[in-house]
Amino acid sequence: MAYIRSNSDSSQRGPICGVTAAGESNDDTGHANAPGIGAKHIGLLGSIALTVNNISGAGMLQLPAIVQGAGWLPLVVMVLICWVASSFCAALLADAISRIPGNKEYTRPIEYSTAFRFYLGERWFYATQATYFLSLFLQNVAAIVSTAQVMDSLIADCVSGRAYAYEIYPVMHLHSWTPPPECKDNEIVDSTLCVPFGDLPSSTMLVSLGYAISALVLMPLGLMSLKDNCLAQIISFLVLMACCVQFVFGFVSRGLEPEYVPMFGENSTHLVGTVLFNYAFAVTIPAWLNEKVPSVSVNTSVWVSSTLSTAIFIGVAILGALAYPNIPDDLLQALASEASGPVTQVFGGLFGFFIIGFGIPVFCVLLRYNLVVDGVASPRVAMFLGSLLPWLVSWVLYQGHGLVDMLSIAGIYLNGFTGFLAPAWLSLVALRASRREARNAADAERGVVRESTPLLLLERDESGGAGPVAATHGSVRPLPKWLRPYEVEFAIALNVTLGVLMVYAACSPLLVLIPDQV
Image (cartoon, rainbow, N blue to C red; front, side):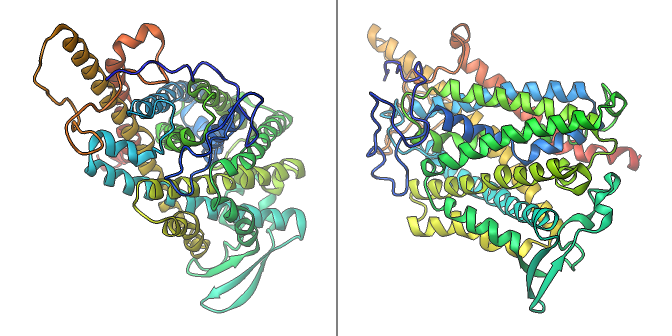
């Protein structure tokens, strides 16, 4: 079953966010059967902002420490590999979704797990539902705690001189926290002393003023649609650009010392994992396809966003490493402290709230969409599980620093599956199905009848019977023209590359223990 290639990927005009450009129309009823799904109002700027914000999150400020440990050349090489691999992975996923019959223009509400159900059946559907929910949920909990702590630090450093929190357990009591003088010392900016209320026992349950402000601002955004979050994402994107400019200026003002950054370092344990998981933005692609304006190009949005993020990664990572002698694992701790100066400190706080914080409602929306569209939960239940439960869990963990770190790590590794391995495998399955359909169509024209032989997937149509599973061409065309005859082989190579990177990222922290045991 062949479809004519859509020209929707050739034009890049569209509304910025919720405002239709002259001469264009939006399909507000295209997802009428999917409660809570927004209309197609996300334009090119909103698309780029959404993707760049997802890539350039908190993990970006972990890269300077990686540079000092692994060296600048390994980091640059790994960033470039992940840039290309993740961009093709996202574009191929969008192309696979467009190959679902009747969805050439993304008019059907196809969410992340919906695509796996169509191509690979119920087992993959439920597996991806579980991993997708856990991945985004755990990352959201860790992000909420991090954002609340940044807000408390900002309140204490720049507003009132101290932060406030009300202890709920074990004793109801009002606490205040003042940053100790040691936080001004560059050598110990990563100390737990500089974490608001870090001197309290880890079993303490409290609600801080920073958490309350974060919830008041960000929780309502998580109850809206992705389209309704578009303006907030554009603001977050502009703040990100301003923060990066200020950070670079601050790095240069401190003085850049080449001896801080070797070409090749001795500790590359976390290099692959940190870089790779920053690029796991494919999880946002299905929901974005449902609400983007038809005239917005998938390829343009994906490649412009990933290229801009890559430039930011390399610049901030190397310059940040050149500016600090003993950089903490998370540079945000240094930037948001008094040791970096008042201007950089303010921008560090803005980064924590607008970049890390504004990513929270996006994940809330994605969680809700995936549950509602696939019929796993009613809109109200999905609203609770996706948009409210992360906030109800995170305040309990404000003092549980080790547990939050564990949740974050678990979310990251789950994100490796949902953001890379699963989408790459789905794309390969869709491409092989399309190749088979093209072959069968050509044989039918010649009067040749072949016995149907499934390749990598269940041959099923939407009614559950045997039938074509994909159009012979998608509407994205993610590969250059000279590579299109080898698209299946390219997808196989992409799967192998991502698989090797994932295995190395998972095992490299364990490899450092081997010499100690010998």
